[in-house]
Every structure is written in C-alpha cells, then in structure tokens.
Length: 258
Image 1 (cartoon, rainbow, N blue to C red):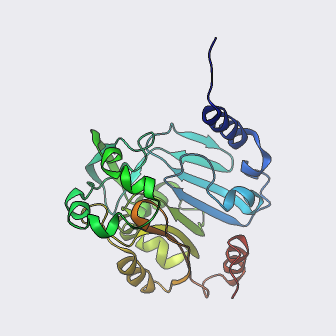
Image 2: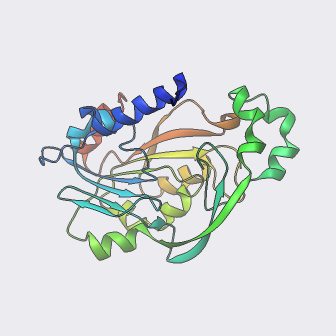
C-alpha cells in the first residue's frame, strides 16, 4: 500500500485545483480587453491574473519547457526570449524541482564573499540551503529569439498591452529585445527584479527602472522583498498616458490606487 505524506497530499490537491478551479481558467469568450504576454509561465496564470482571467482577451505564454499549445484565445510558445536571436547555454540548478534555473550562472563568489550579511536576510531556511539548491545539475542549449521578432513575424495583427516576466535575471535582456513593443502598445509590466547580483552579470532593479523610464514607464508598485536573501521584488510599471482605460484596469487588478 502506497502511503502519502501530508505535504504530498497538499501539493497534489493544489495541483488539481490549479488545473480545474474556475479562478485559474482563462476567459475564452472575448469579454476581456487585455492581451497578455506571460514569460516564464509554468504553473498556469500568475497572480493576480489567475483571479481576473475575465479581463484577458488573448494570452501568449513563453515557456521553453512546455509543449506548444494553441487555442482561439491563447498560445503557449516553447521558445526562450532574449535581446536577439542567439543560441545560449541554459543552466539547470538543483533547486526545488529545478526552480532557479537560468540563462545566467549562479554567483557563488558573491554569496561567499558576502555570506555574513546575506545569511541574515530573508527566510532562514532558504539561506541555509542556497548552496545545496544552487548546485549545477545540467547545462542545455537554448535557441533564443527577441519578443519584437516574434510579434512582428507571427502576431503583427494583434495588439498586446501587458508583459509579465519571471526569467531569473534575464528580464533586462528580454526587454532590450522588446523595444518596439515597449514604444508602441505596451501599457504595463510585471517584472521580478533582483536587488543583489545573485546571478552573474544580471541587471539589477535600478538599471531596469532607468531603461523603462526612457519609454514612459513609471514604477508604481514595488512589492516586499522575497526569495533567498530577500534578493528580489515584484515590480509593476505603467505608462499612464498610452491607454488610460487599460492602465486603470491594470491598477484595479493589482489593487493599486492613483
């Protein structure tokens, strides 16, 4: 007889809920007004969009580890994004089920040199297990393309409004390959940005903020720090003047007052 621990049962129930619960389903009835791009989309719609699926008209996912899927109002694209068309190494770390894997290498030297300070930041259990979880398991090769290239080639008739990226340090590089999108139709962004160089050579929050300011985006919400060593923040950027109606809707979804 197979025995399941309480933790395994809880994870199984959560997995079933994410698959079947209505709040995680996308509205395919063309009632929403926002066309959403979700980069690093494994696990379904990200919060808070999972409870506002009725606001979405079309969803474009990017997840290299998932199979291509198409529907009338969604597509999962199994291509990695970067600032240009390149073939790059992808580093797979032990993590929790390979979470933390990235196009960038873990910055072991930085963590070692700053351990006394870093070990006091964030959840203690994450700090204590960082070196174990950051063990390199495998290096794969990924073919990468830019977001502008894909939109122009395959979605030229569709207007996208919102971009969410969770790419373990590659956010800046993806944004550099999306300058046309940022200049024209993008109204808002949800980015997970680092404040310490947990990966080698990544751009930190202040550099990304400065880049987006050039396109008229302002950082309107920086959520509390999270992750190992409190290394990152979820950040919401909006260009208020581009499409006030959609900008207002984004604020409501994220519960951000003017």
